[in-house]
Length: 119
Image 1 (cartoon, one colour):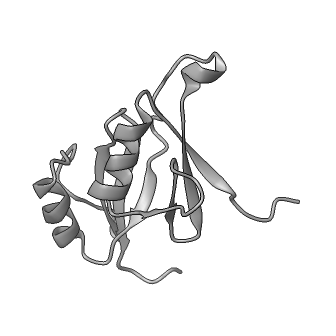
Image 2 (image 1 turned 90 degrees about the vertical axis):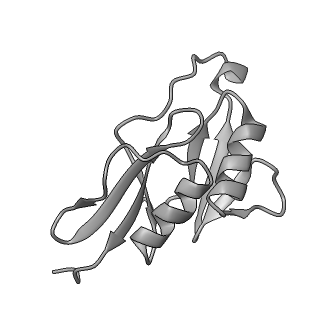
């Protein structure tokens, strides 16, 4: 019944600030047709403002979007130089490395690199 993930909603209180973070800081590809959409591979991220539809703003918590990187150390260094603050040292699960951080609105994100082949 469900064939794919169409987009991920990114709640924001300041869409211009959020766009700058995802496009300029993280380097994600902006959508050519919509100012407040950008792409991670084949997945669209769409910035939205809950207050504009009568909802209270709450950042996305505990559903960390896992952003794939090939080189965890280099990615952390590059993002750290751009002001990204990581919550802790890189976690090694035995199959992947994960580094947790948030966007300017407090939405949970992680850098992710799987180094062990899938079973």
